[in-house]
Image (tube, rainbow, N blue to C red; front, side, top):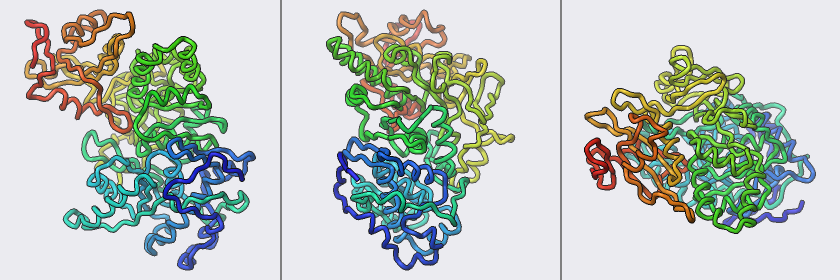
Length: 594
């Protein structure tokens, strides 16, 4: 098989696929079929991947832009089997027994988005265990919390995360003073088990005696921790089958598609939206890990060959800013190549938080009338609402109707907290029965904590009940409504609106903004005062919705998944003790400093 464009990962201990047959004797307690080195579990996800491995020419599964690696479905399955078999050999007899009994076994994976992550994730599933993706930017102490919380029996690490994995191992061994005592956890470097060449498709079999329970534990995705320590949300194995295929069908994914993946992979969007739905349809996932680089993304769009791009509002905001500040200044012919690159991508996807209307309008114009496909869901619920493949019939600002098979109700009829029943719901919070029980109402609906509004079949997200609903002067105000109007101003790049405690009003409406650089020949505010901002909003907002606190920042910090953590950031930017950069509006004076 040709290997053009395929490079080794350093340090890579290349092995031949023939070495997969070297399975040690201690595995003889398992059934011959399930223990065979070239045998995958009887599970729909693996039967699909094996089908794609037979295609000629070989279908490309993963392209890793950082390492330069490209791998076919056949080579991917070869590497999965190699790593799975090596992992199996290193686990204790007790863990083997747990796997044979289809008990819950959890294995962490410490890797950025890329080929090694995909191999590691699928190898864990092929073992019959559940994968626990961890962020590669975690401090060691925080990482130890996730390892302990997930009850991990082993850890897989990528070549560029091996140092962090070793430090984490050492920290866990030395942590004798914490609950549970010291922990000696096995760590395997994924790159050392990658094969230099693929096996033959006919050598890979599906088990005829062992099948995996689709309702068993398949993955843990940790929650963002906005209301306390992050919880380990256990996803069922059908996360990789029914959930993935349903989303793929919603998006119209096929085997000729390629998605550009720039997300962290410890996040539900990074795995459940941007990887599994594309692999289960035989498409290609192209990874670009590391910090988000708008200039690089625009160049990659221009180069072509992509059909999907997935981002969050912050990413689309920064891509828009790069266009306005850099690309718009290019000669018309050169600028056109970038615009055509964006238009040739069949679908732009957006989730995680609400997409401001001005941002949607910008991208709809750039893409020749094609709006961004917006969606709503959570780590626990998966996808709930989506505008679908063609969002042109969906009202601006809406996240579309509920997906088929999902039951939704709003607490107060057509507006209120969004409650969800779904066949694709997470299984539980690991080792936290109380939190699992409390998150559901008496009728079995999941409490999302988000406020929504329904107009006909379509839903609108008003914000997080605990953060985005501001109670000021007797009014209940949606922070997202204010963000939408501020974001539409020509000099605003990013905006965050929060409620700040106040003795007189209960809460003040506080806005933190970053600014665009001025376009040539266009008058623009370079440092707006709170009074000027309010003047510019007079025709869009009622007086009680107007910001009374303003802070101008260079950029709004985000998490690895592109979220602005409002609760934490609001307290930092608008501290109770005041800050000299915060402008305060009162009726008596325009903009004195706090």
